[in-house]
Image 1 (cartoon, rainbow, N blue to C red):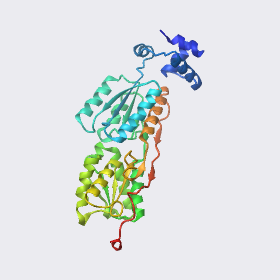
Image 2: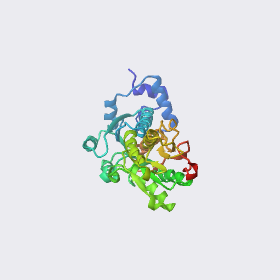
Image 3: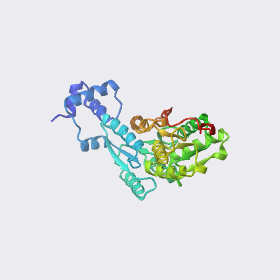
Image 4: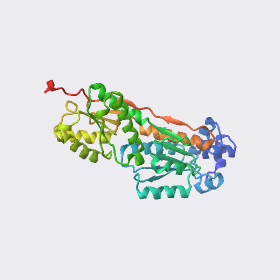
Length: 339
């Protein structure tokens, strides 16, 4: 049976160096790490997890805490996290539960009580529920995806800027009656990113002198619920907007389907814009603000590995890029002379 000494001999390093290279516990040069890992692969070496844990005090397991992964953003983010963890020889323990649920509270208690992880990646924790502070209190290396804290490394997009740019795009086209689709009651407590996007919409409307035209259509950001909300909004001919700024692409797709069911043409009679660049966005010709959650997942693992290796390093906040992608769901509003 192949042991760590065999790997060390194959790589031409000391046993202690091979152990550090494979466990991540201590510094070795990148060149040496790659040489040791290559030797381990060639010898089909696999460290026994229990023995490694006893020897190093590490479990090689990362706890990932996030909402349910039945939405595109979370599933893509998780794919990026998993890809990067596997590449680093780390295991993943996933805890997923809906925001504000009793299951989520029990999940947090379990994760905090166990402390069986080398580090934590926390996705879209809610400031109003003080979830991030609870995880920071564990003392474990921690990366937050979404909400900011001066005490934790963070990967995020600028949600305010994303929604502001989306709304400004509609205003620049000539729209004045723009509705924000996605303002959920209680969002200030349970939906941090969505509330920030509402702030961005408000900022754009106020800057354009349209503060009196600000209005929200409350909905959860899923296609079925956004469809139902948009259908009710658009069915009212007297108060029908000329444009919808959706909190995310799934809400935007729901709005487009609702418009189609009502015989409202997009974009000649209604412009719709989203945020995300969901895999359905191109299929629906949706104008959107693009982000890449899979890359954000990889970046979160990079930050966590750096924190695990140097707990005293300065806190790092990474703002992932987001850009406007113009497709065919937005256009100038139709005038009376257009018929």
